[in-house]
Image (cartoon, rainbow, N blue to C red):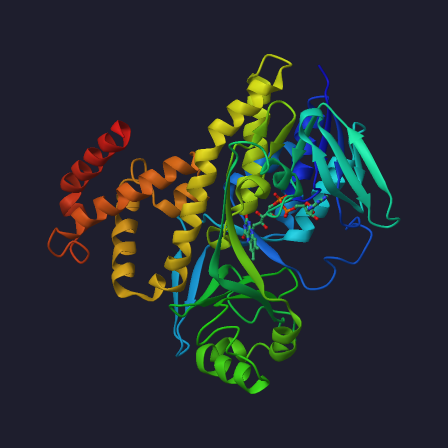
Length: 455
Ligand SMILES: Cc1cc2nc3c(=O)[nH]c(=O)nc-3n(C[C@H](O)[C@H](O)[C@H](O)COP(=O)(O)OP(=O)(O)OC[C@H]3O[C@@H](n4cnc5c(N)ncnc54)[C@H](O)[C@@H]3O)c2cc1C
């Protein structure tokens, strides 16, 4: 039976979900608190970019916009690390040209709004902010941001895709036995800018994600189609150095000249950008349940907001839509209580796993990529994945170039560490011809495979 569904939040996940549901004949109303980004200049200025990888692309297949998105994406095949003295070192992400894609976040959102809006059974209302929901009746209240009036919308179900600070989740928090955990890391972030060279070319290697790891903090840069890079400084709020300690213009300039001299030379508007751009916080949100009967379901960041260090938040949200679509197709009944419950049970462990993986990856990016022991382990990992491409996968590739459940990628990633420990006990293994140890290494992998299966 065709259902009347209210989607609250017209971000990337809400719009993609609308496409999945509209294709199955449901009647969808999206309410978005911001203006229509197709009509205003949002996104026309400096681009904020995100890394789109396999899970996200797989989710987007339903919308049929992969070609369009990839035509304005820049593949990043590996990480380029920049030491303080300007030395660069490169680490490929995967093999055989595997890459993650730098895309404009606004661009993807606009394309998805366009795609959802093309369905007759999707109606999008902008400038409407959800202020309250009545859970038992799936009734939502919205404030018209332009006129100040209130509207009330009834539906069979509400799906909340209103992001990390979800208004719908806030209402669910007041229900009995609702678990809620919110965790801010000590670091915030600030976006900065490297413009293109005068001839329009890229000032840094175009097809890489650039990292300036500085142990307690780091800066990264992702390429944009116009030859520029969007940089993000991940930096503690307090302490020394920190956002709090850089007070004057001189403090800011001195800090960058000491820590990021090569990048600073490419950032003519550093000071203006640093002072004008906001400092934003980074939160992980874990909640359960995600559903209230067949009336309300949380999806995307509203269910599992994570820190951005694995580049997976949006990818995970697109995977939510795909998994929900598949479960909807397999679910033979009109009673969505069971559907919502099965979805939350299936998906919650994966939300928790990617949250953990993302927090761990911050340490790897800011600190370990400059650590010789870490690079030794990466070398071992690469040897194993080259020798045994069918049976050994790096944690990064399981998350990024694969679509096994995140929880399994987390479990297997932990097992990999034990395999590498055992491998590094073989004398001189990284310098000798690894083929000489093929049988020994294969036995190791097989033994751990059995442990993964048994656990
Ligand atoms: C610095 C940074 C870098 C990131 N990099 C990556 C990356 O490389 N790769 C990746 O996959 N992910 C990345 N992410 C995460 C990604 O941006 C999010 O996971 C993704 O945007 C979540 O999509 P969403 O639609 O669930 O929520 P959102 O994008 O937050 O969209 C929610 C929508 O709901 C609307 N809304 C909110 N409240 C209301 C309300 N009360 N009423 C009506 N509408 C409302 C908002 O205006 C918004 O349009 C990054 C995040 C950050 C902060």
